[in-house]
Length: 80
Image (cartoon, rainbow, N blue to C red; front, top):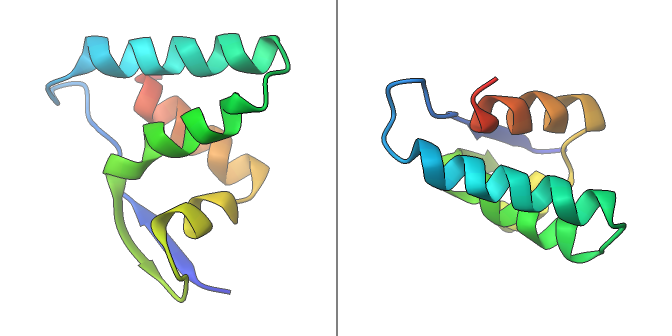
């Protein structure tokens, strides 16, 4: 198993509205049961991946994250 490292944005990072828009879209797709939610989640986290040692791609690394890790990352990107 590889190692995924993500540096989430901080409260002072630019792009807050863009991140909120992405997070709202992901949550809307999840609520609707739309499989496109998975791709939207990967795209939302992609810019914050700083390394993905042991994985073939950023996407693979994100897809292999546990549910607990993913929720933590998603909330950090969302600004919570």
